[in-house]
View 1 (spheres, rainbow, N blue to C red):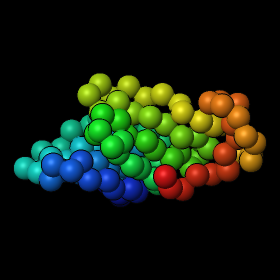
View 2 (cartoon, one colour):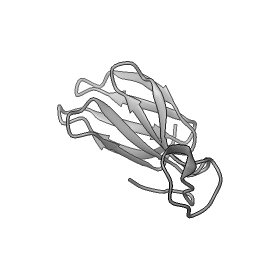
View 3 (spheres, rainbow, N blue to C red):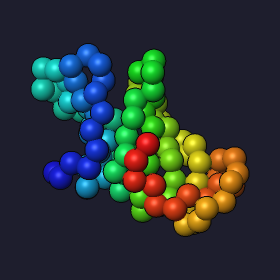
Length: 100
């Protein structure tokens, strides 16, 4: 799989997104598990407390929150249409976010 983005879990492991649409966790011991599925996400960052990941979805023009414990995905911002419109949640328009 081709990697898109990488973020440290601060315990020796890594979260990675792939071109094929997977959000994976690679433990310090090398164990790989799928956390969630996602589309084209070239940007990823772990929350300060480590409970959530935030992803920038280039293809769908959205920002997502993924709960690390459950893999639940929710949209933080973006209507899914390209644009530059202030707003809250899906009322905002984002133009192809590449990073977070």
